[in-house]
Amino acid sequence: MVADLFQDRPRLGRSSTAERVADILRDRISEGFFRPGQRLSEESISEGLGVSRNTLREAFRLLGHERLLDHKLNRGVFVRLPSVVDVLDLYKVRRVLEGAAVRRTPSPQALTVIREAMRDAERAAAEDDWQRVGTANIRFHQALVSLNESPRIDELMRQLLAELRLVFHVMENPRAFHEPFVERNRTLLELIESGKPDQAAAFLDNYLDHAEKLLVHAYEPNR
Image (spheres, rainbow, N blue to C red):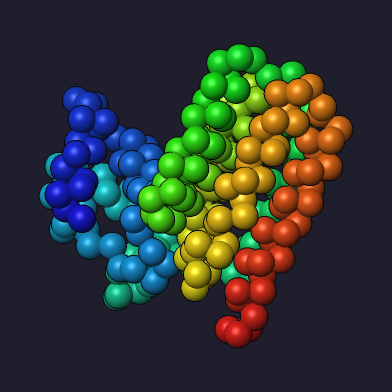
C-alpha cells in the first residue's frame, strides 16, 4: 500500500494541502483499495505521500465529515462501513442527481467520457476483474452526473460514490452483483444517445431500484 501511495505524490505538487491528501484517499476508497473496518496507519500513509502527520490528520478529519472514516478513541482511524440507513439515503440522492442528468441534452465530449467508462467496465468484466468493474461503474455514474454541468454537483457525487464503494464490499459475490449492470449501462447510454430522456429516466429508476434492493438484502443477515 505504501508503494501505491508513492505514485500519488506528484498529485500533491509543491503546495501540499489536507484537501489534496483527502482527494487522493477518497479516490483510493472509490477504487476499492481500502475496505470497511480497515485501520489506516498514519505512519505508512504519511510516508507514502510524503506529508506531515498533522496534514494527514486534517485530511482524515475531512473524510470523517464525509462519512468515509471513523475516529475511534485510543484505537485510531478506520474505514467506515455504511449502514442500511446510509444505503437508502445514498440512493435517494442518486435518484435526484442522476435522474436530472439523463434528462439533459448531452454534449459529444460528455458522451465520450461516459462511453469510455462503460467500455472499461466491459473490458474488466471480460478479464474477470470485478474490482476494476466496480471502479469503472463508479466512473460511469460520475460521468453521467457531469451532464448536469455543475461543479458543485460533481463534487457531491464524488463524495457519494466513495461512500457507495464502501457499500459494495458487503456483496459476497462481486461478479453476481456487478455483471448485470455492465449491460444495463450500455442500454442506458444508448437511450441517452438516441435522445430519449423520458425512457432513459424510467430505465434509470428501475436500475437504481434493483441495485438498492440487492445491497439492502446483503445487509439482512447482520441486521
